[in-house]
Every structure is written in structure tokens, then in C-alpha cells.
Image 1 (cartoon, rainbow, N blue to C red):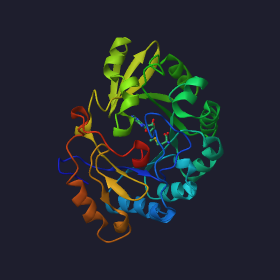
Image 2: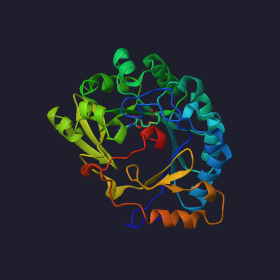
Image 3: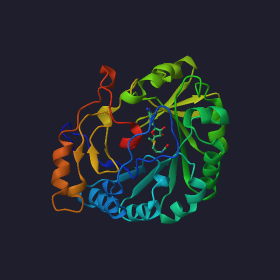
Length: 306
Ligand code: SAM
């Protein structure tokens, strides 16, 4: 479906919960009020939403996210239902519960998972996320054993992973693609971003990384015999090619991750006017985020759905 700038929007990231079992310092640094159960989209509503997006609006890709999607009760039926209607379904997880779910997710139709992993150092992992690195690594191993494709996503942070070699070596050892993500500032995480964020393009240049290709928003580099992808929403803004929307776990549609606009979609799920409403909202998708001008999102990444 085309937006107001002629971009073909066909990729939705759906948050299935705002709850998370980690507390990543750049993501959701402080507790937010707990949502009432009835405010969350139900399992059936999420499946119908996926069906509407694919069958009525021509979407071809859906990623389930959160919060942490694996803490959502009903995640396996959600995956099964979405996989039945969508050709390309992904899930983004911190991996903590992946050892429990890897085989069930595969059997429900998932072929690959993106696991967020900022470091392979146990103490640093705990300091950044509040969690236990061993659980995340066990999850990655289980995904691999279940035959799932793996991408590892690390948010680039000064003093945490600005030496990327340990992560690169680990990624290679488990057959995963590694992507470093430039930290995006949010209103609630500006202090942490001020201390830790790095310009990913400058960082890659300062290490002498060699550009080796481009794959959508991922710029590939080789470094000391390893491959790495860099996703830099600030230093190399890719809004002109943006093909996505985000839908929160309460059914709000955000045409832009960093935009102030959020449109209620819940009442349209499964209705005749779903497509028309989506067309109306997509016409309002901004041409670009305003991060460079200091227009920071007031909602946390974890509440929107990363
Ligand atoms: N809990 C899941 C996970 O950890 O992958 C899914 C939700 S999380 C919000 C999705 C992704 O957003 C993760 O890869 C996380 O690292 C990334 N993320 C969170 N805050 C970010 C920020 N300020 N800048 C860039 N990426 C961020």
C-alpha cells in the first residue's frame, strides 16, 4: 500500500506485549504503569490483525516484537496464526526464554529469529540489561539446534561493544549474522544515550572497517576477516526507503517510530473498512523522523514495540 510519499508500505512490526524480562538501559529504563489485561490486543485480535494486513492491505512481512514477545501468554498460537497468512514472519527476542520456545516456534512456522545481544561479557551484560547472559546464550544455542536462522542485533554502546571483535567471533561461532544498531535517542533515555551513544558511521571508519555492500537499511562491512552489518538510523537516515509501520500491543498504529502521531486501529481489526482506514493513516506517514532536529519520541521503545 502506497503512502503519501510513494513508499510501498508492506512491513508491520506488531508488539504483542509491553512487558519485558530485561531492563535494557537504552530501551525502557524506568517502570511504566502496568496495562490492564483488557487493554492488550487478544491472541485472536493479533491474528486477525495479521490476516487483515496481509489479505486486505497486501503486507508481506510481519515481525512480532515487544516488550519481550516470549513472555506473552499465547505467543505460540499467535505465531501459528500469523504464519498461516503471512509469507515472511520474524520474531525479535532477547533470547532469555528461547531455550523453552525454540522448537515450538519452529513447529508453529517460524524460520528465523533475531536475538538482541549487546555483549558476550557476563558482567557487562548484567550491567546493561539486568539479566543473565547464560540464559540468552542458551536460547541462541537452542534456536540453532532447532534449525532456525539467526541474526544477532547489538545496540552500539561506548565501553560495552565498541570493540566488536568478541561479538563478531561469537556470531560466527553460532552461524549468525551480526548487526550493530546505532543507538536511537528517546526522551526517556537521553542521559544514557549522551553517555554511551556513538555515531556508527564514524565508529566504523575509525576502526578501518571496509564497506562490502548494502542490503536495504543494513550497510555491510568487513573487519579483520569477519562480516558485520550496521544499521544507522541517525548517521545514515533511511527514511526515504522506509516500508514499515508499528502497531503497539494496545492496537495503536504508529506510522513512524519517532513520530508523535499514533492512530487507534483496534476497532478496525476484522472490519470492512480496515483497508480504507489504513490507507488514510498511511497518507499521514511523515517523510522522515526528526531525530536530527531533536524531536525525540516520548514513548519508550519497549512500550511502542522495537
Ligand atoms: N525484547 C525484544 C528484544 O530484546 O529483542 C524485542 C523488543 S526490543 C525493544 C527490539 C529491539 O530494539 C532490540 O534489538 C533492542 O536492542 C532495540 N532497541 C531498544 N532500544 C533501542 C534504542 N534506543 N536504540 C536502538 N535500538 C534499540
